[in-house]
Length: 344
Image (cartoon, rainbow, N blue to C red; front, top):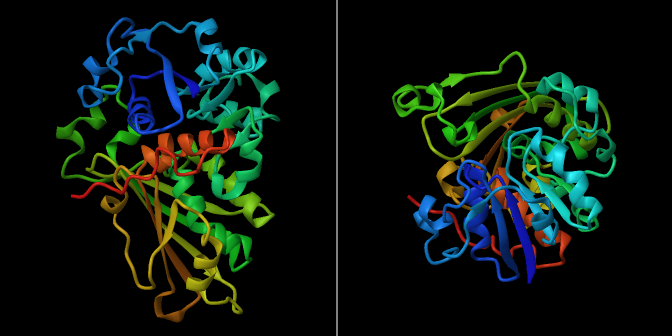
């Protein structure tokens, strides 16, 4: 059994990790930290986990206890993993970070977007971006994983086939994305209150969102060149889910787009290319580590429209983190992740 530690277990990604790992046949959660809830039983804070973690309690972060684990997940705000990851790696513990601390390869760019100096620039060269559909082999050998963000996951998966094949102009890409309120985290914030978010929709970060440089970095890798991206996120009155509508300008000699997508993701367990003409719904991926895609070419014109849906807490966070764990330790990629989505 693999011994697992979780730093920051009280947020939405933390409890989602616990829910997924409860079904994992090869792991044992040995430690879960929370300064605010230290001493409290996990099943008391999260009754849905009763019967799975009845002996597990939240504790203060203890580097020695965490270092005794084979792998530690960081389900924390940005800046926390900077302070602890290096020590854990030095002690032989692998790290899977769900925050943004190691996603950007450029420390100065990270500082620009996150408003503080990067706390561990010496680890950036070692960090592996944890999008299995592009970095599977590097993930297998990695010690430090940067789990992609939710918006970047939905956008990159939707555009990878087009950019890798050179089917669209990389300088003219639009990503129009909608997210449920859990994307804002579990902390009490007025814009996330039911009375504020319900029966309304709004855009935010239109002039610059923290996920923008991460998306540009990943798309640039796929294209082999710098990309021109307009990214506009929106808050929608639902709990879970991301819907990304992606637009690109096609080149004249573009091949069959449906066939292109089906071929690119034919062997990916967590990407579902839907039949031609489909319109995937966020509820079809609720609770599942799945990205569902549909590709359209309106009027057979020069614009391609890709529809990409994921659960922001699963494929966009904790599920993708578990997928990375499975690759790192040689487990079946679907271990703990094979449950279908929840409907309604």
